[in-house]
Image (tube, rainbow, N blue to C red; front, top):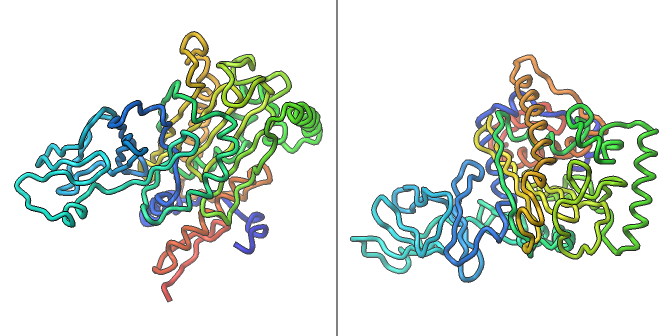
Length: 421
């Protein structure tokens, strides 16, 4: 990672091998299983015993509210692997396998196994496979590689200041939806890391927001327009005592990179209504709307946009080497009343519109990248974070592969032959 600047100049998007190689894909699952990935909000669970089932990196995961917080388990019985929970959500005092009636406490411990005489040690060895569940201001994150996860305290320390300002611990889920796209997950991440594509694909965004003037073009005139709006916003927002700025670049040296940035939407844009209007009551510590938002991502799979009146968070989920889902969540203040204080259609309009446009763009890229003649071009300056992510990804895939003879991608998108010697 010493030659980041040099690698940036030659970094490319993903080759056909990187998008289709099954052995490489298994290493990607191993990499992502050590990342903390957004799963839900605490408001989705009202009582001890409430559970929900999620798809995460080709695994089925149960998350359940316990007396002490939240527990996570892989959704299969430790006896013969039968699926435990067929329903997507429900309430349980215990999880009972439908195959042989093995029963498990909601914390995953084996409770009973008919016609089996087991010692306490044997019972502990047959507990459900654990999934780590952690909480940052009410936002739940899941980790599959229990015992080998990225340090969560580092993640929490980075996210907590702006998540706290947003009042996410006192929020509730207002709406969710899921989109499925026919593309490798990296092409989705590639798209959401840059706005170079925004002028060509997101007319609503470019009409309403100021940032495309610097994130989608290198026009000096448009830069000056952005600078004037941004400087004026910073001065007014500082007087209010609201947060400003942050880190907007992917840290290729971080085990899990965090980007959190608070910036201006536009001079007359309060939120993401069709005319830039607010859509819900103010959240958290905001007493007035300052026309700003908190934006960022937690690793490659969790992305968020939070104006002062709601929070939008989405998870990119890997379903297969060529299929990806994007799971969208909108949060509002816990006291906000639907159809009184907010309307779901209005609340979700902007990001559903934008997401549909993104899916078309990503699937077009995926279709072309399947050609045996495709060779990705070098990233440009407006794709800076996409390039940084490609370096972060390739370095870690190479590290996973270092003890085996493998074809692994180099930082510039070429392929190296790495031996175990």
